[in-house]
Length: 298
Image (cartoon, rainbow, N blue to C red; front, side, top):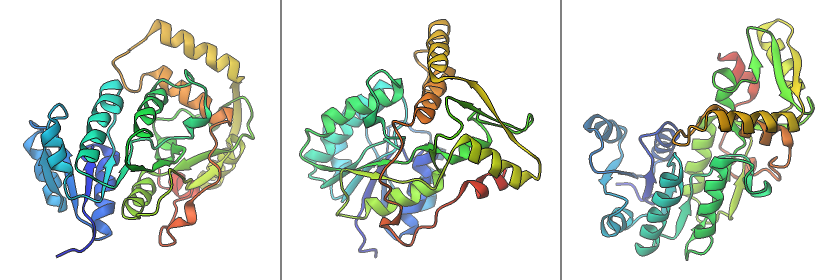
């Protein structure tokens, strides 16, 4: 029987949440996955197949939520969504953790350092800021993990490295360094932090750091062809395009409409949300995945 502390994980059926569940279990600690009542049976079976305990509860049921949290050493949230998920459901999860006297809480932040950005700079990150206002008033130790951008997105969703055109798109300066961390590395670090009773309020990690010019050099080395940088415009122009896209296609119910990605890109190239100092060395057993490995695996 494991003597490691029990970790409650919310959002374990999502991509990042599933990786966190696997990472905690790999470290030899038990996981209790919180899922909504009515979650498809195949998802419950998948979680149990990993070795996780499953607790079903509705976020609108405080007693059931507190019961799900009971006996755990840390609540980890990997919830994804808009106001309902990030503010309302996380607040219900927070209240349940406090009611069950859970000592520690890790919110679903996993982003660049939005605490350095002005309100309104990024809709999705503003939701996390709103939740922080509640979290910081709660009688529980909280730790936010900030990781920049998910490095995995460079090979699919993020329109930065244009492989077909052999270009690296940028806004503002081609020499602005940015933070990138793979989802698996974020999950491994989060698992270690969940089992660490001494974590501070913020932990900042970056599997690699690179500017647009650096990305062009790495892509060229990996592919054996020359990549050039391509300046799309200044940050003010990107901000204006984002505002226009948001007016024309508001898509208020979508978590990641095109203009939301444009906001995040502006935040990266702006530089104010750069992560510093880094806590990569906090857990010496972790190995970080560099951008060269990410692009080579494409």
